[in-house]
Image 1 (cartoon, protein in one colour):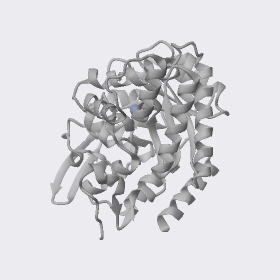
Image 2 (tube, helix red, strand yellow):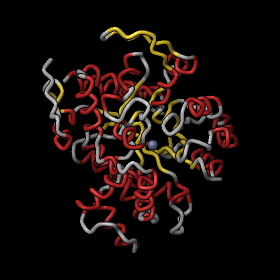
Image 3 (cartoon, helix red, strand yellow):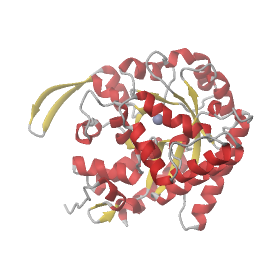
Length: 377
Ligand SMILES: [Zn+2]
């Protein structure tokens, strides 16, 4: 197999698999945060406009500051970075610009479809209502889609509205998501601290969404373990899991002989695998937040490959491109480097994602066709 990935991370945007540039491959992103995907230069511009003090004076320095804070190994440092991005996203224009650029950046990264999530309740301190904030983001998404089209790329993007696990607003956010169900919002999510804030605490919101047959994906199995995944599935009827990597806690390795690993799946892991509940995995993010610390802290330690080999529906995402200084291309390239993936493997991850989007089935099939055609080329 003619695999020739560049090993240095800064070169990963030029990475190839079997001679094909990874960036050119059609991709589907299921787990991208709007407030984690800003360009450093845009944060600077918006900070200036909003009168918010930025911790660095140039885009380059600010990009480095985000990466350092996010990887300092403290949750405090990590959360501080979002304080800044959220502080500068409090006006209609700022939200529209951020969404528009996010779509453009994803399209340049080869994405043909993405679902971007954010928490409207964090964007009202400048006087916007949550509904106005959703409209502003939708406007940016549509402008970004038009920009991409004009540049010869085709991308479509849906919104996922997140409510904060630690906050009191989940019912209101669920109602908001339903109000916009035919106007760009495709699903509901719970974000924020997982431990101590189970999905079951948001039963009113989750029951409403169930009654209305509205899709739910929940962050679970990232900062907390199997109980959190159980609650996401039972209380949230989640159709996908945000990260979900801790499902590997429910795997028991019985025997290991060279390449041959025999694994027993617990009932929960078997349910997630056999019901094809997609895992929205973001490897770099998982390394910096400690989500995979049980297995190690290098990409080679990530349970992604074990889950893939066992038949779980794994997908590749960035979570927060700004904080992790990453792209879809880079995430795929580093996995391919670590686990010797071929183009066929990478195609499988994209087909998994396409099949797990919250689009109607005929549109999912169109995506699947576009991916197959793109990989055949
Ligand atoms: Zn996330």
